[in-house]
Amino acid sequence: MSSTLALLLVLLGTLCSFIYFFRTPNHHKDRRKLPPGPAPFPIIGNLYMLGKLPHQSLHHLAKTHGPIMSIKLGYVPTIVVSSPEAAELFLRVHDVVFASRPKVQSAEYLTCGAKGLGFTEYGSYWRTVRKWCVLHLLSASKVECFAPVRKAEMGSLVELVRKKAAAGETLNLSQQIGQIIEAIMSKVIFGRCMDAEIEFKPLIEDAMYLAGVFNLSDYVPFLAPFDLQGIKRRLKRTSNGLHAIFDKLIDEHERGSKNIEEKKSYTDFFHVMVSLLNTPINPNKEEQPYIIGRENIKAILSDMVAASFETTATAIEWTFSELLRHPRVMASLQQELESVAGRNRMIEESDLPKLTYLDMVIKESFRLHPVAPLLVPHQSTQDITVNGYFIPKKSRILVNAWSIGRDHKVWSDNAEEFFPERFEDSNIDLRGHDFQLIPFGTGRRGCPGMQLGLTTTRLIIAQLVHCFAWELPDGISPEELDMTEKFGLTLPRANNLLAMPTYRLVA
Image (cartoon, rainbow, N blue to C red; front, side, top):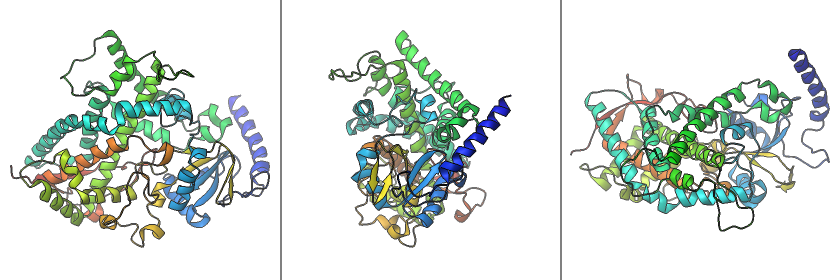
């Protein structure tokens, strides 16, 4: 009976879709001109064209249809932006119109109906939560307060890698980087190391994949009850796992039985939030005071943990991958580190502002391997005309940062090459001022945690490159290193990065 009903629904949907989709594809229903793009199929639109690596598929489509391209994802009108000039139009010139987020199934489950920060619709609630997160976790002063945490964990990491080097063992860099990020961010966010039975990493990896995958239920609503991809089931398992951890931590706090660790020189984010449970999130605002409930806390924590754990680890992995593939760049970076710190001590956080070549290396890594290749999707809040093209209300906007980083018009004929020196004497930065390089987004919805992530990324790369020489195991040449990507909301390596360290400091 259910299969018969499904067949009838598909047939009915197909009939309606033929009428809807096969009108002139690049004109809206009132004949206003949409951006150019490939003709869509019934029901699924252009979803079939995305493949396993959508950022790459859209990059190649844009070569044919242009940097402002119109496609259909199921029933959802979607604009793909693939050049710095186009990105500036959508993210600066008309920023307020495209500052909202689409409603997606992943946010419903992972962040309790989009009560977090990343996928929350633009409005007063989002503005309030963002200000609150910046104040208690992401401001420059807070990032500086967390320096002792980073220093202690970096000392432990160097000691562990030194033992591996002495034993002549191969190190799973992906695993080790993930563990050090989890250790640092657990103390920053929760004020403690997680219990051995709490395994964030598998849950976070699953959450980032599910948040980025193109879910049929989001684009073809009448198919949602069938969960054809099994995404809803996975979302339930992942969100239940994450929220069970958060519930346990909140319960411990409320009972007063939380672990007592060493005295801290900072107040962690979690305890600030939980201490304000059931109080107005902005007590100075009389109109529409938002009360901090348990769901709000769990939603915000989901966003903070996912963003801080996964994105930073991914950025470090790709940077290290490129350094291993380019021994010349590795040697140049080690030379700079040695000139600043010598060979008798580790890198200190105070050394980071002096490391200009390190900054060039990290910029080049973000150019080729943006952590979020399509950023987080935007959504238009009203009808608007951009560059002569009509963009309907509730269109989804995908900014292909991966494609922009490979634009030969911007980066010359060697755009596919890892060449940090291209940033020498360049004013291009990572903060969204220059639309050639926007790995953290820009405008109202730019990533507020950029400073925290960049500080951790720079310190870990500098420390590991300064303290150790590295080579690939099993006689693998730099040219043979696997650089396969795995698509999700973020873009991690498909396979773990392995390398053999040799301790290089004198002391």
